[in-house]
Image 1: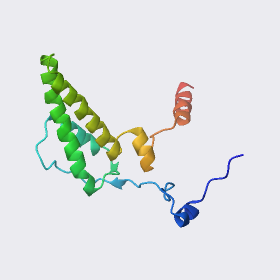
Image 2 (image 1 turned 120 degrees about the vertical axis):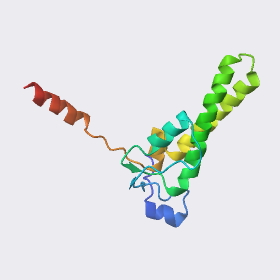
Image 3 (image 1 turned 90 degrees about the vertical axis):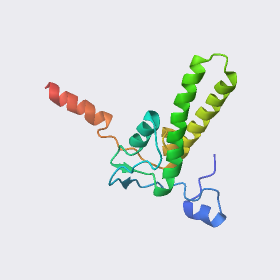
Image 4 (image 1 turned 45 degrees about the horizontal axis):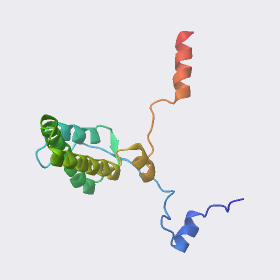
Length: 143
């Protein structure tokens, strides 16, 4: 039989790697979507707006620079992808495109824009309606 888990208090006393792993981030309400502080093209601007499209966010003021860099990388990806698709022998650029896509993916994970990253950050997604409530509502509407 495995040993029982250690409490957060004991982890703190022992100096464990993640003593506050039971803690979760509390999303903050958004007053207004901040303006990007550098020029963004279509893809970057779409990500910027999607990041603030919910009424609450876990992004802090200090995260805006990383978000801005990620938006700029998305714009750069669009330009590079068009070039690579037009020039099939541009293998150096194709390798650069894959590297850029990997950097974008890492930034999105760091910012908590993937389900696994949100889970690691302790961010709970609130569903408007649970599956059970949805089924009960359909049943009530039918008869």
